[in-house]
Image 1: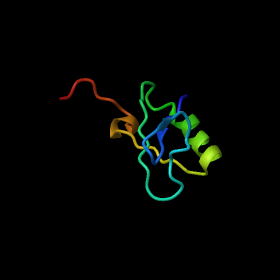
Image 2: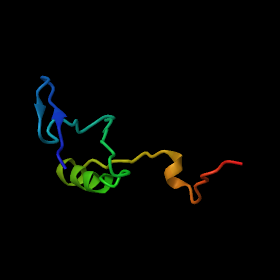
Image 3: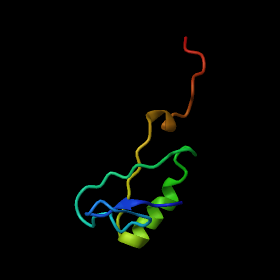
Image 4: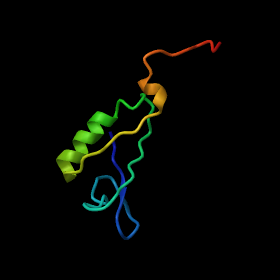
Length: 71
């Protein structure tokens, strides 16, 4: 995966250097693979910046049964 971040001066860099160490941060990923990239991203953030990511998903991802034909 490629990680881009923005420094305080507005420069976009190809690293996590622009991610602040404190305060809330919104990480937005391009979930082309149903969020399967979250694990490598979380590991990378933890190793590089000691930041623990929390993933969010649509409730349908947690359904045990998908109803194709609603009655």
